Figure 1 (cartoon, rainbow, N blue to C red):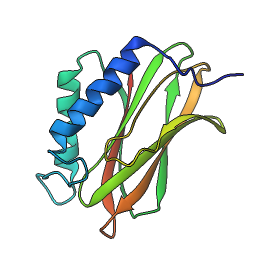
Figure 2: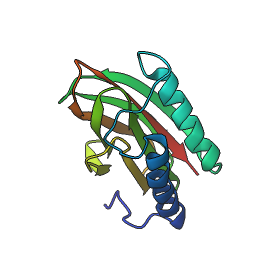
Figure 3: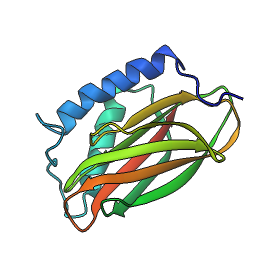
Length: 157
């Protein structure tokens, strides 16, 4: 059974492309420089940055939101319920002293796909082929502090 559809929909391709443009705007001229934050924990900055993405992409409908502090090399997971045939976009974002965050999506124990590019804004779009719980794993690949603040959101269309 194929879980990942490599060409899920034009919407995913255009939204992921918009996320790349959004990353350049949200993260400043260099995507490896930590963005300014409104508070020491980075929550206000993460909230505002996701809000700006949603303003720029009004077709996005958030169904799950997650925040975590992770040290370099650490991972954390959260779940959301998917419906077969629905198009999903998972967006990660890290603040503080983070220069690389990765995400991977699982349906049961099978990987649906991932974004492991060296950046602060991993994105992954897919069409769910099964209904039920799906897990998103957030991995802090590069963080120069004891822990860095990260967030992830799951969107459906």
